[in-house]
Image (tube, rainbow, N blue to C red):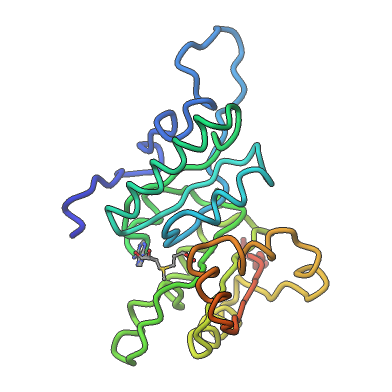
Length: 225
Ligand code: SAM
C-alpha cells in the first residue's frame, strides 16, 4: 500500500541527483552555475520501462521519469537502467523511475508547467462502470495533468481496449485545456512510433495481432492564463 513508499512533500524535495547523477555532479566547480535541468517527460504506469529506454537516445538531453506502482516492477526498471548505463557509458543517464501512485502524487513530483510530454501507454482498463474512477485518465486527473504540463506540451495515450481508447479520447476532447494534435503532426512525430513498439505491453499486443487506439492531445492555453 501507499504507506510503504516515501512521497516527497513537494517537487523541491525530489532528489534529482539520485536519479540522474551525471546531470547533478556533487563537485561543483564554483562560479556561475547554469540552472539545474528539470524532469520534462513523465511515463505514467511505465511498467517494465521499454518506452523510457526507447526515448532516451532520441532526447539525450531531456530528463525523463517513469512512475510505477508495483514495487518489484520498479526495482526491475532501476536495475535495467543501471545495467544499460554500465554497458553504454554516457548513455541512458537521462532516464529514471520512481515507485509511486501517480493518481495521488503527480503534484508532489512536478511543478506547474514543468512537463513537456506525458505518456499513458496501455493503462489498466478497469472495465466495470464502478471502477471507471480508477482509470488514470479522467476529467479530474486531466486538471492535474494540465497543471503540471507546459502550454504546447503533448499528452500521448494508447490502448488495445477500444472502449478505454474512446473513454480517454472523450475525456481529452471535453477538457478545455487540451486539443487534438492534427494527423499530419502525429505522422511526423518520431515519438508516435514508439507508442506501439517500445513497451512490453505494446509488444505483447503486436504479437497477438491486436488493434491499438491512440489519442494524442496538446496542452493549450485559455485566455485567462
Ligand atoms: N506502460 C507499460 C507498457 O505499455 O508496457 C505498462 C502497462 S501495464 C498494463 C499498466 C501499468 O500501470 C502496470 O505496471 C501498473 O502497475 C501501473 N499502474 C497502475 N496504476 C498505477 C498508478 N496509480 N500509479 C502508477 N502506476 C500504476
